[in-house]
Amino acid sequence: MGRVLLISANTEKRPPVFPLGLSYIHASLVASGWEAGMLDMTQLDYTREAVTNYLNAYAPDYIGLSIRNLDNCCMQYPRSFVDQVCLMVDWVREWNSRASIILGGAGFSLLPRQWLQETGADYGIVGDGCDSIVELLGQLEAGQVPSAVSGLMFRTRAGEWNYWSPYAPEQLDQEYFPSRSGFLHSYDVERRVRHNVLTKRGCALSCTYCAYPSLEGRAVRLRSPKRIADEIEQMVVQYDIGSFDFVDSVFNYPLEHAEEICRELIGRTLPLSWGCFLNPRFFTAEFAGLLKQAGCTEVEFGIDSGSDICLRSFKKNFRQAEIRTVVQLCRDQELDFSFCLLIGGPEETPETLHETLDLMEELAVQRIFGLFGIRILPSTDMYSYVGSPEPDELLHPKFFMSPQLSLEQANSICAPYRERNPDWMFI
Image (cartoon, rainbow, N blue to C red; front, side, top):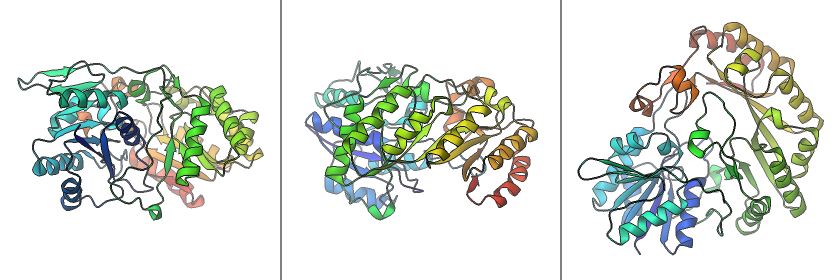
C-alpha cells in the first residue's frame, strides 16, 4: 500500500477548529491498513517551505485535501479561500507531479466540479468519504481507472466528467472513532484548539439559506448515544480532552436523541465542559436540566431574527414566543446562551431589524453574533430566490441583502445597540 497525507486547508484561527471530517477519513484509512498522516494548517505557517518540508519528510503517494469552507461568509469584508487552496495544490504539484490529489470536505461538496476545474486536482469525493476514500485508493493502487465509487468525481483524459452520486449510509456507528492524534506536527494546545463531536448527519428542517440538507440529506441519520459517550470518554481518558462542542447543525433534533446523549454522559460522571447549537422549537425545561447535568456550559440558538415576519421568510419552525421561552428556561438553569442573527433576509426592513434588536435588549441577551447579508449557496431556496445564478459564480463570495435595507442602513441601526451591549458583535 502507498502512503497517504491528509491536509486540512482551513486556516481560520479564531479559534482554531479541530478538523473533524479529516480525522474521520484518517481513522477509516488506518482501520483499513493504510499508513496515513495529517497536517492541520491552523497549526502551521501557510507557506511553500512549511508544506514542502512535510512532503519531503513523509513522501506520500496520495494527498487528500479537505476544504471546509468556500470563504469567510462575511459580506462586509469578504475573503475567498479559493486562491489559498489552489496554491496548496500548486505546491504539491511542484513537489511531485505524479502524486494523486483528492479533494473533499463540506466546502468541496457544495461545488465539486468548480473546485476541480479551478484547482486542477485529480479527483474529488462528494459527501461522506470514509468508505469512498478507501475504495478509491484501492482502485488506484491496482492501476485501475476509478469507477463506481460513492461520491467520486473526476475528469477523464478526453475531458468528460465522471460522477457517481454519493451514498448516505444509515449506519453511522463505526468500529473506529475519529483520530485525535496522527498529526505529523505537534498540536499546539496554546492555540486553544476547539475539539468537536458529531452525533448525526442530515437535516429535516427547511431554512431557506442552509445547505445542510443538500450536503448531508434530509433524512436524519443518528449515531447511538452509547457510542457517542464512548467516544467522549476516550477523549477524556486517552487524550485529556474534556472541552468540546457538539457540531451538529441542530443538536436537539430529534429531542429524544439529544436527551439520551445527555443521560449517557451523566451516567459516565466525566469532567466535561461543552457547547452545542440548538433550535428553540425543541427546547423544554427537562432538556435544559439534562444539559446542565451533563456538563453543557453554553448553548447557541440560531434564531436568525426576532421578527415573526423574517422568521416566516426564513422558513423557521419557531416564532418570537419560543425565543422568549428559551431565554427563561436557560436562566432557570443558569445556562449561558447566545443568539446568532442573520440580518438582511428577504423580508428584512429597518422596522423588522429594530424589532429584533429591541427584543434582544428587552430579554437582556448578553451575547449576540450577527451577520450582515445571506451567503447564496447552491441547492437552497435562496439560490432560487435570487434567480439561480451560474454555479461557477458561487465559488467566490456572493451575498443577498434585502432591497428594503441597505448594508449601510443596517450598520447604522446596529451601531447604538452595539455601544450599549459590548458583547454584541455584528460583522
